[in-house]
Amino acid sequence: MCIINNVVFCSILYIVVNSESSTFRAAVYEHAVIIPTERKAWVHRSTALENMMKNFEIYKVQAEIANKQNVNILVFPEDGLYGMGFSRTGLESYLEYIPDPNEKWNACNFPDKYENTEIQRKLSCIAKDNSLYLVVNMGDHQSCNSTNDTKCPQDGHYQFNTDIVYNPKGELIAKYHKINLFYEKQFDTPPVSELVTFDTPFGKFAMFTCFDILFKIPAIDSLKVQGVGNVVFPTAWMDALPLLAAIQFHSAFAAGAKVNFLAANINLPSFKFHGSGIYSPEGYGAFYYSEKHGGKLLIANLSVVQNGNFITKDIYRRPKYDLESKNESSQFYSHVFHDLFTFVSLTNATGNISVCNGKLCCHLKYERSNGGSENYAFGAFDGLHTYEGVYYIQVCTLLKCKSSSKDSCGKPVKTAYTRFTNLKMTGTFGTPYIFPEILLTDNGTLKLSSGNLWSYDRGTLQSERGFELPVISVGMFARDYLLDADIQPVGDYGTNIAFCCKPSIIVTIFVYILSCSFLFVV
Image (cartoon, rainbow, N blue to C red; front, top):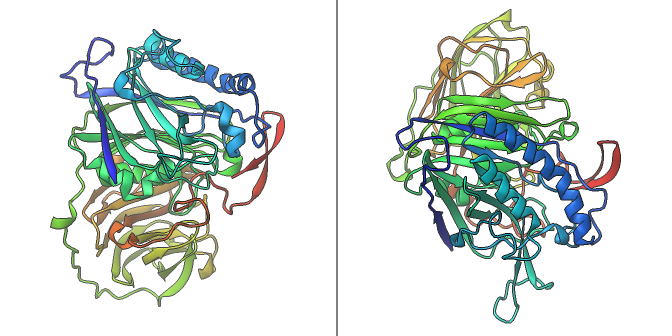
């Protein structure tokens, strides 16, 4: 069962944009979250508030900076007010009852309407004082009774991972409960899946969180709501190179879905949690990727998008290409994120090569510099991904191998020196949900390519002038949601799982941050 929750607010009196404007100013904040040391045992509400206020004060300062730069909408990351690694009991005091947005509760003006809502009151005032739309992730406490709700947890309440939106008057106008949890035993999967959108003078926005992006509900279905051309995306995303780094996949989603995409990530680079951006169908407005620990506010102007533009399944037809081109070398197999890809090596400075896996055939025409001194391979995969998540993918990818060994193709790398000066990639995808990925490097720092250097259309990714930096990977990552059917949940969490909000293996790890050692478990 899926319900659309569409909350509307279109007043132009409280925001610096008019109804005829063709652009707006968006901001996301990558937050170096301050995580409490005690996250397993119950703590008093006063302790929880003290811990959350450390992060809130940073939010407040960033909102004030955004206001001075005429920002219209500001997005903060998932888990940004308290961090990760909580037990259910340990998180309970951090939760607040979040009311139905249809009430349009203005917590700044009416702070005493609900008890234990101190954080919501302060967030409402941030939005009001800075005259902007504010998107924040926090925990929602909803009481229930097992006598009339068979899904009610034993402790008598739900704990939801929740995104909330305030308008520039400080009114709560939308909330979304994360559907696809990732090993988040502190939270409950919502008994009813809701697609949440909200209106602004500069377009309609969908809202979902982190791991949700990989699934039809809510990501794709919310984009099919009439008028949706934008997404706000709080996340705690851990890079999974070579195909699923944060800036890589989130920018690809914007390009494939043809939407504006505002992705705010947490910042724990020692454990690969980093990479935020403001993306459009034409490329990036701003992005941030750094190995250094610390927050970063990104601001960019975006063109108003009134509706996304995915091809609907009923009119999509698998394209056919002449794949008789002679490969430069015999094919081989290597794993990429535990999926066994079919590869061919690039052995010349120019080439015209093909590779197939399952029903997917990929074709690449290319020119590169450096005379082929670095090892690159072109690969294909068509199948059910089953490592730390279960979902059906089709992928065509050109990637740099970690070494001269063929079995290193698919292992994470961040350095390269080879520039591709011309490239055209095509694939016989059986789905319209294709996301074009381009990941470059500047002396080991991951970068994206400017949107005016490449184009994408219906299974064809092309750059006639090449890319401005050496290539880590270029490809098309596609999802076939129809082939996800009958997938059983993984583990005991009641949901699929993958790389979002995770270490490379789900284990206990130790984090040292802000001069405090603490146990960090996901």
